[in-house]
Amino acid sequence: MELIRGLHNIRAQHKGCVLTIGKFDGVHLGHQAVLESLMAKAKELDLPATVMVFEPQPEEVFTPHHAPARLSRWRDKYTALKRIGLDRLICIPFTAKFASQSPQEFIEQILINSLGVKFLVVGDDFRFGYKRKGDFAMLQAAAEQQNFQVVNTQSFRLADCRISSTAIREALAEDDFSRANEMLGREFTISGKVVHGQKKGRTIGFPTANVNLKRAKAPVKGVFAVHVYHDDRCYLGVANIGARPTVDGQDALLEVHIFDFTGNIYGQKIKVTLQHKLRGIIKFATFAELKTQIQLDAERARQLLR
Image (cartoon, rainbow, N blue to C red):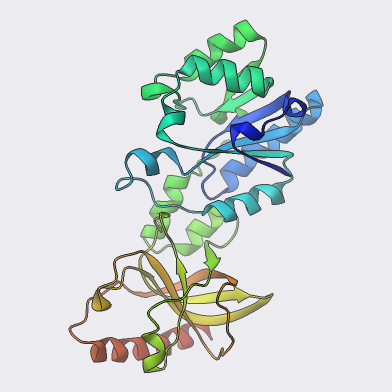
């Protein structure tokens, strides 16, 4: 799969494609049904199957405090889309400047002049351009004038599918991991590179591997029994996801204590899958109380994961 980052990297050889535009957050089974149909259409027209996404997601730019939690960070989304077998992924940096262009500019300059789209798949609620004035009806009108086809995502699925990113977030919020995993078609995973933290865990015998979630709001919060994947091996552990009120933590963080592990993995990537929720996030009066609770959490996690 070819990755094109930014409109400035679209070249003449990229003109002519079957395209879908969306968030594809989680790349769940509903998304996969659309993408399989997209690839079949691309094969029929002998054109590359292409996906366009925006990074960050528009809500994270305009309403960051109300943006939905992410099911997949950018790197995980890229990996999942690549695994499906698409030809191209176009990632457009979403900025206020990009959002200020008119809907007509988006259609004419990007879809027609740059990409030469021949078949377009979007949600019928897709909005684009300045003040989100562009809509599905505008795309349909342009398609008639410019000789390309546009269809909505729902009608393009091979079968009736009620899976959505929202439904998966709701399942995760209810700690129903099996239901979320069923809709995703895999286990829900949080992954990233291990960064240096405050190193307070090691002072009480519970060193943690920390992943900074940055702007990607996690759809879960609390303490969990987890599986940790690193270097093609699976380990057991206990993880805290969210802020750390007892030590005045502000940033969203994944902290995972990996059982019976002593290696140095700073700068290396880990994947964490949630198996059981142990409790919510609590602010303890003292660090000693936190230590006692972590010991209880770790013991319970070991029992549940056996």
